[in-house]
Amino acid sequence: MTLRLALTPGEPAGIGPDLLIQSVQSGSKYELTAYADADMLRRRAALLGLPLRLREPCIPSQPLLPGELAVVPVSLARAEIPGELDPANAQYVLDCLDAALDACNTGQSAAMVTGPVQKSVINAAGIAFTGHTEYLAAKTATKRVVMMLASADLRVALATTHLPLRDVAATITKELLTEVIDVIYRELTQRFGITEPRLLVCGLNPHAGEAGHLGREEIDIIAPVIEQMRQRGHDLLGPLPADTLFTPKYLRDADAVLAMYHDQGLPVLKYQGFGRAANITLGLPIVRTSVDHGTALDLAASGRADGGSLEVALNVAAHMAAAISPTKTAIQP
Image 1: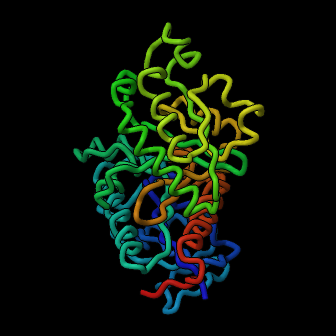
Image 2: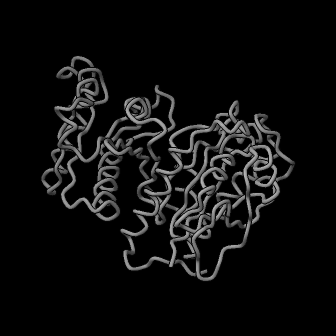
C-alpha cells in the first residue's frame, strides 16, 4: 500500500517540470501524482532526453516504476516556451493548485507538494497573488497560517511573510504573535512528533531594541507575548538579537526559530542548507510542502536543475502525513 502525494509543477516555463520528471527517473515509493498539462510534461521530458511514461492514479495507489509518473490533466492556455514567461498561462498555474488542493481536501491525496511559481507573471495577468502560503490560506478559509522553512539542522518560521519592510513593524501585534506561536507549537507537536518544543524568538529591531533605545516593539509586544506563552507551559527564549540568535550557543537546544520577517530568518537558513530544505505551510487543514527555491528560468530544460529540495519536500510531506494518520498508508479516491 502506497502513500499518494499531489504535485504541482508551478510555472511551466521554469524548472518545476524538470524537477518533477527528474524525480521519478528511479521510480518512487510514493505514488507521485502531477496535476499538470500532460503534453507539457512530455515536451519537457523530450527536451531533457529523459524517459517518461504517464499513467492515471491507481486504485489502490501504487509505487512508481522508473520513469513513470501519475498525472491528472490540467490544460495550459498556450504551449510553454522554457525560460519565457507567458501571462496567458498564469491561470493554469492556479488551476493546478486548486485541483491538487481539492485532491487533498477529499482524501484522494495525503499531502500536497508544490513547485516554484513566478509571482510577477501571475500579477502581470491581472491576478492578485502574493504567494502559495497566502493563496492556500484563503482557499481553505484558514485564519492563521505560518510559513516555515526546514532543513536537516534548522527550522525557521516567520511571523510575517511577503510584506514590504516598511509594513512589518505595524503588522506585528500581540494578537498576531500569539496566533503564530500557537500554530507553531501545535504543528511541531502534532505533525513533527516533538513533545515539548523549544522556540527561539527573534527581536524585531537591531540588538532586540537595545532596551528601548532602538525601538520598543520588544518591550511592548514581543516580550509580553513570550511571557504569556511561558505561563501556558510553552518553552520560549527571547526576544533575542537576530545577529546572535543564529549561533550554536542558542540553536543546539532549539527545535525552531521564529523570525519577525522574511529576510531576517530565511537568508540564514538558505545559506546553511539551500537546496536541502523544504518550505512548509503550518496551520492548514492539509499538509503542504514546497521547494526552497524559485523558478530558475535560465535553467529550464537544461538538465542542470538540482532536485535536492524537491526530494526533501516530498519526504517531509510524507512524514507529516504519516504523523497525522500513522495507520493510513494508502489513500483511496
